[in-house]
Structures are given as structure tokens and as C-alpha cells.
Length: 374
Length: 178
Figure 1 (cartoon, rainbow over the protein chains, first blue to last red):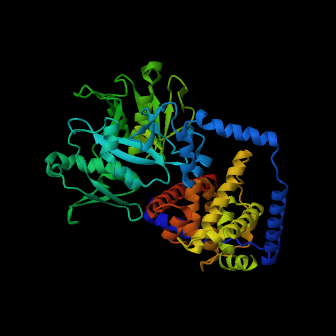
Figure 2 (figure 1 turned 60 degrees about the vertical axis):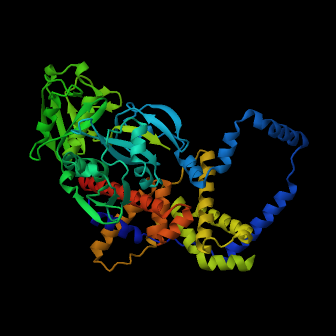
């Protein structure tokens, strides 16, 4: 979908009807005066029975000993926004995610600034209504593979503030490689014009290794927002480099496991989805990269509109072969080819954790959910 | 009190009512909330220091009243009325000068969008209503919502993206259903 679609939606919104209050002005005013009178009358009749008042007084006296003073302090300092979030976001909406893979393991304060819930791996199918996704990326030690990372943040959050702490956040989760090429970068992100300006003085940018890595890294971080161009400027605000990410927008990819996280293995642009899915069985010389599918598993691939149909040969696949990683790698690979759903046929069972194979499964929104930053 | 009421009524009443209506999508509830807004305005006008404009102050009172309503509703464990009052559409005359067929399509599209607004989060919906339906500037919207302009832009972008995707799905569903 394009900017023209954005404009169409905005135009439709601008033309939505203006609702008018049809009550006469005088009627509203009369009701108002009655409400004022009513309130003042109720106020004069209000009393608190002595016993109840005494109980409240005793309770207030005892309160500081019962409740950690931080809680009271926090309550009084809570902003409207927090309050509002509390109204609508109290229920955990992890049911929208492939929640069986996501376990909120711990909540803690990082440097006293953020409340973070750790989430273990997996993919995200639907973003909870009060959260938004921040796309980060890192790479393996040799700089060969880019690993997309996802953080959940409050939907009203200022995206730039998280990107400003990119290396700190990655470091906090042990995801920061040595000499990370975006270390110290300042991000200016405009989602309206779909532009990112990166201010940095990093000699690593001139490293030949970064020529390959950098566009992939930035592509993982910004293509999900529809941003296709990143401009680099130096401290004097002079443009030093512009990277066109659009060529990476249609990158054909397979997903493998790397040290518990997924990695993307880019394929030739003329690869088919079938070839990419079969590539999931491939072994690599790097012992840390694990294929997500047993080499003996056989399957055929068909396409029906935006759905990929993967039909397994029953004799070639056992229950133990079907893992969450295999299912999710297939879904993610299909996504990289632009499909929206995958139908799994002839699996040895119909349900694996949160995935029911009786109907096509939607492709995920994001991969490697690292944490929910409150 | 009457002079103050008249001033706010004449200057902001329909805009505030429109904002409240879009947030709750229920005429009676919207009327009650607007009454409450006047009570709060009259009670607190003495304390209005002019840090923000009168307009954004009045709207932020309306926003608080709307959220108090949702809070009470949540306490009562009742759900927000998300049904579309189609009666509202009968009063609506498109402003475009499109051909009759296009007008019908546009009206249908707007009805879909009107309904999809409820699929947005409350914060996204507020931004959409204030920015696009009511034409407030980014700065005004930020002041009303007590957010930074950057936050408003983020919410605005995300809301449009969400509406766009939902709208495309809806249209696709409608076409395949035909």
C-alpha cells in the first residue's frame, strides 16, 4: 500500500460527518443550573458517620506502615496518559500474539527509567492495541547475518527516544556486537515523509564490511515502517551518504535459527518461495546456524492468491519433526515473498501450541520479540 | 455563570460535542458528558491561567470527562457502545462534487471507516478525531492530549496505517463476498 492509500484514508476521515448537538442552548443551560443546584444540595446533606470517620482516620494513620511509600508516591505522580492506559490496557493482550511462545519472565527497572517485561523469542502476529512495535537489528559476530529484533513499547511512545538508546538497549540484552556500526548514531525519524536522517561520525562506516551490512541492518529497522531512504549527515549537517533501502524491500529470504534467535538468509531475487522453503533444510558450515527443518522432510508448495499451501508427504514427517521454529520459519519465509497466509497440509497433528493447522495461518508481523518496554 | 456558559457554548460547543460523540458514539452519553464538561469549565475557570489557549483548555477538560466516563464504564464492566448509529448518516450530505455513483462509493467507504475507527486504540482514535475530523493543528492536538508533537505524529501515523490495513481487508472481504 502506498502514500496514495494514506491520502485516501485521510480524505475520507476529513469528510466524515460533523455531529451536531441539536438541543437548544437554553435547554442545556437550564439543565446545567439544575445540576449545580442538585450538587450543592447533595453536598449539604452529606455526612460521614462518626465510627466510619474514625475508622478512616485510623486507617490513614496506619497506611504508611502497611504500604511502601513508593507506591503512594507513584500514584500521585502518575500522569493522565498512564491513567488512561490503565483504563484500556490493564488486560494483557498477549493473546493476540503467538502467546504460547511468549513468556513474560520478569519485570524489572532498568536504570530506574523503564519498566521492562522480558519476553522469550517467538514471533508476533498481532500487535496489542495499546502497544507499538520498535524494529531494531543486530548481527552475528562475523557480521555475516543480520538478526531482526522487536521491542514492544507504549503506542504513544516517542519512537526516536528508543532509537536514541539503541546501543544501550541492545547492550542491556547482550545483543550488542563488538564495534556495532550504528553505535552512537542519532536518529531523526519522520514517519510522515518516510525519511530517516542519521547523524554519526563513525569511521566504521567506511569499512568495506559495512557496505553490505549497513543497508541490510537499516532495512530491517526501517522498511517495516515503509521508510525506504536513509540519509547520513555529519556533525556539520552535511550529507555524507544516502542509502536507498527499496532494493531490499523485496528481498527474498529464508529464516534460520542462530543462537536462539532467527536470522535472515537472503536469497537470489529470482528464487521461488518453494526454493526458499526447501533451503530451510540446508546445513551451514557455521555450527551455530541450525536448520529448522529435518533434511528428510518432503513437501510440495502451491500458491493460491496470497496463500502458500505447504503439503507435507505424510511418510516423511514425524510428530517430533514438527517444531514451533519450523512452523514460524515457514511463515516468515512466506512473508518475505509477500504472502499473507500459509496453509499447512498433512502434518501429523492439527494443533501445535497456539497454532491450529485446520485453517491457513497468518504470517507474523515481527520476529524475535525481545521485551515489552513499559 | 450564564455569560461564561454562553461564551463557551457559542465558541466551542459543537466542536466539543463532535469530539465527545466520536469518542463514545452514543448521543445520550455524549450529551451527558458535554453537560459535565460545562460544570467543570464553570467550576475551574477561575483557575485557568492561560498557559494554553482557551480552546485547548476546554478540549482537555472534555478529554478528561470522556476518560472519566470510560473509567466508570469499566468499573461497571460494561463495554463501550461500539455500534454505528446509522441514523447519523441520513443527515450527512457529501461535500464532494463527484458523480452520483462515486458519491455512493464514497459514502460506503466513509461508513466503513466510521466503524473501523473503533478498532483503533483510544489514543489513536483521539488523534484521528482531533486532527482529521476536527482539523486541529498538531500543536493544538498535542496540547489537548498533553503529549509532545512528536508523540501525536507517531500516533497519527500508526492510526492511519492501522485504518489503511483494516480498510483494505474490509474492502477485500466485501469484494470476495460479492
